[in-house]
Length: 164
Length: 118
Image 1 (tube, rainbow over the protein chains, first blue to last red):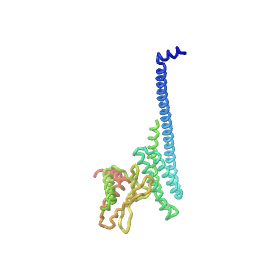
Image 2 (cartoon, rainbow over the protein chains, first blue to last red):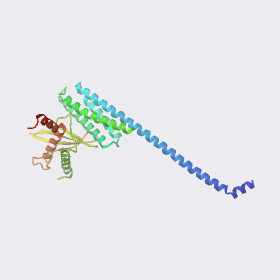
Image 3 (cartoon, chains in turn brown, blue):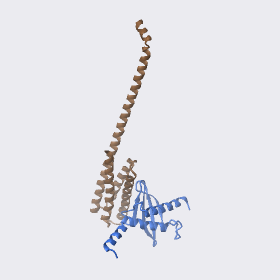
């Protein structure tokens, strides 16, 4: 036993063991940090992918709802329309709020559609307040809706492109 | 002139200038006398109304939810003297916006094309 202790003392094996332990601890710490960083990055990527998917779904739903509005115009279902305008407008406001990093072009396109729908809602409410039915330019209204649909479709293509 | 009126005046002037330069694009709306232009966070609509045999131009500023948050009237000065110089500028701006939104220039070019050279 004494021989062994002398051998350890002679070759300073205690110090070497301490240094080796320290190196192992440092390597372990670095590996753990790399793992945490990778996990965080993966979680962030997953969060971004979910947010992008939500945006794609919401924009697609808004395009679909705008197409329905065009059909309602053609069917002269005036009394349902203010509610429909408001519904789509609110969904576009939500898309805008959920995507603060959207490009200036996307934001402007959304802002334009939001204001057009707000204006349509006010105009339809005003017309329905004075008469049961509305005598308005259906083709003109659908042209406005068509422009918003085109803008949202272009936006959808751009968002999907950035996904790749 | 109060600070806010000065800013209104400046806003109308700049919209007029940028429209003349073709840098902003007005669109027609559901209301036949109203035209709008959007920016990333706000939009602006311009309409004309007849009040007591006078044509009044109204510029509305919309927030990010499409709600009107401020209105600038061409008769803001309160009398015919056009104290703030808005009546003439807003009238011109309205005409520029209307022509741009309805594509009047292109229509006239097409008509001239159909009619041929004199």
